Length: 125
Figure 1 (cartoon, rainbow, N blue to C red):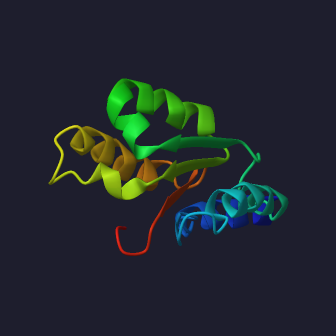
Figure 2 (cartoon, one colour):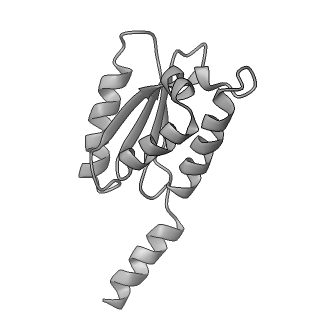
């Protein structure tokens, strides 16, 4: 029992972030692959569920940081997928800045319980 506890504690200390960036032209299957990947993460026990929350960067900017935090909670245990992520550019657009700040915090603080997949076109992301 003690060995199992040490092993679990060690995994938490050395936890790897399962965050990804999928790039490709329109229609190449980025979203489809991300949905399938949510199942792979659960089946491999790297995530506790195959929850898949999908949104676009523009929607996140339109809804604001409070709504984004709700999406993060909804995606807990699974995957948050952000399409056209390049639109969150915090330098070029003040609406993207608070979303990016929340995203970076979540990527670090929730690394054991949430995978974030950003998607977009190779030239833009």
